[in-house]
Length: 301
Image (cartoon, rainbow, N blue to C red; front, side):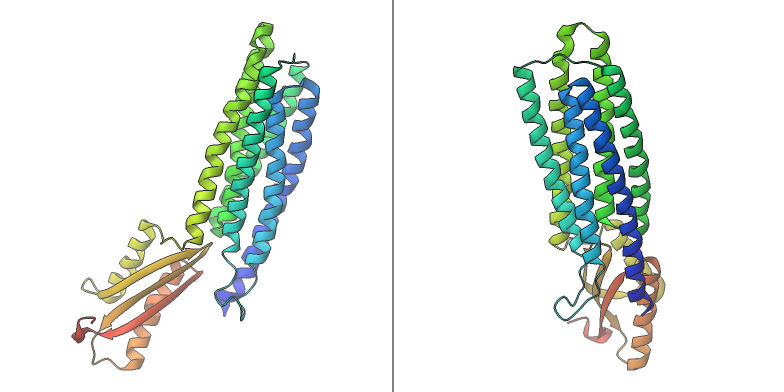
């Protein structure tokens, strides 16, 4: 019962983290669009467009975490954890849409060059927005590890992509500011490079979300640790088979057949299985474990 009660608290805290992301997205979006208005730079416009995607993605993340916090019911017996994968998938798709828009805008500017103005103040505003995103991204990455949330991790990586995008844009426009007017063509070229980098991030997020929805197995290092628990609890000669794992957002599912001496009482076998389950849950609290006991004398047939 304690484990089931802990989940809503964790999700509530995760939601509060997303609220920080929403606030940061609003502030940086206003700052970056302001920088674009000051300068007329299409690369700063592309940077501002990505911030608007950050805002949409953060709102989607908030909704997904709210749904994921629901307890299991008659219709969804295993809970709503996988809502997080939909969130990161939507975020990846939004990133891809933003990237295509950025590249299209850059090509248009490339074909119809426009002089830039007030680059100094505009770049200063963009740097302030980048500093905000960097601080929020690092905060969210720490919390994503603490809560084992792919939604928070996706949002954090999205923000960090925005940071590096902004740094690249500011650095290149700083060069343009002190270069001859002919170098203004660098502005749309930067925007195209930004768009291509964002596409890579979006594809990675969509791929990870799809893997989660397809019940991908736990990472190899976690499976090694589970097997280590079995050897610690049952000795180096422990016999088990049909070992399967999967992950649903932050919840893990583990099942296997454990071979024990046929002379054990039901209570003794149950107690040994319970000890194994408790040790695994000590390492990963949100874990559901199914152990099927078989007599060792049959060889697991």
